[in-house]
Image (cartoon, rainbow, N blue to C red; front, side):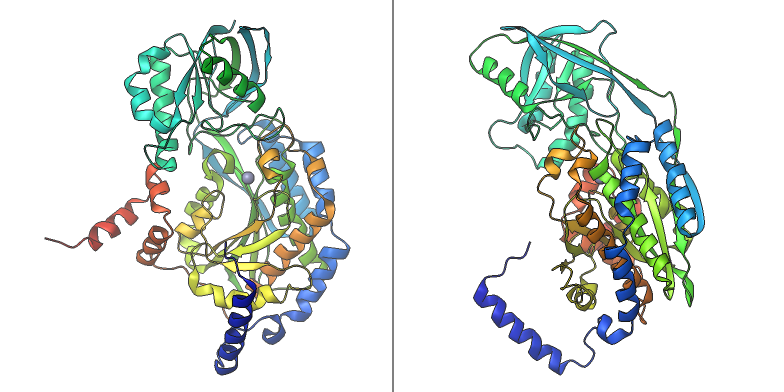
Length: 510
Ligand SMILES: [Zn+2]
């Protein structure tokens, strides 16, 4: 985040005005490029007659939790298509793709047996396994997430034990490398005969009073070992016993089910076709899938219903953009950004005609920044549009790559994978937890976020000049490396061969 001190802000404002006066080719905003009257109509529909919270209420209470590949997620796919058809989007359809494996949560029970007896609060992490049917008991032993190399050397000590992941001392590798290595650790612990692993937060404590947070432990990663998130209160109690040299004995019964093979999922797609260049496409998206400890209102019912609310506001405004706006409700985000990776693959031949993507997936707060997904060349172009929103809200612009949601595949394709960053201080409690319910969302904030999404979408699709064309891969590789995304992508095996070949070419030959 950029922070401005009072004095510097004044100086830079004066300097900016001076540059603006000289530079006749300065980027045009809605006041100069002819888009303003349409944006005023769309803002009126979005702010004064929003349907977004009504959509979120239906999705949360009538569809509910929607884990990718589950029957509930299929119901959400049908619900999304029905909403799009009713509001009058064109070409509404589902685009199928395959998830490597399906998973269903069963029960998760844990009990402290010694030094005192009481139940413990746990939930299984997604795509992790089960204890024997009757449960299993063992002593709790600590495992230091910051030194997994050492832990793997002594893995046999976990036989018949429950491993409690903690963080001690300084990390021996980057946190990304450690998280990637955690998968190797879980497989080794399974082979060594560990009963279960308490490690949902990678050694950090679960945020919130007596909350657990589920989630996946890698990209498309599944583990036979049962792994749980435990409430911070219970985890701290276990740590105190171990710190005092006492034996904490626990009983775990965790039951989950995997499918034998791949399962089908689908992204939901609907369009407002462009009036001049319908072949040019801006993707506007959020993810429809959720976790299952509550109803997924903030992650990412919020984003899904921003997409639907934005589409509805534009349709009702009667305005037709020059280029096509394609609204996409992705699935499989929670398992490894799978739906949007599938979209980019399925639309490979059409990617040269894409303008970028606009995604919201950072909880329940108001929008605070448009992050242009690595495209520093577009920041100055975008700023006059953001400035035009000042009477709704101050929204900053930067070129950060967001690698934690459906923006990533678009940034990797050299397009602006635009992240609508939000100010969501409570999201650390609600995401992936039992608190991810409709109560967490304020209707006025949702209406405003959906309106900002509608305005940004329409402006990008309708401005006279094309907003963006994809960068060549060489430039994208440089950008991803400069933004330090390469380490994460390589650690999780997501760095494409084409990118690796480019890197090899760039090495000085000797
Ligand atoms: Zn999400």
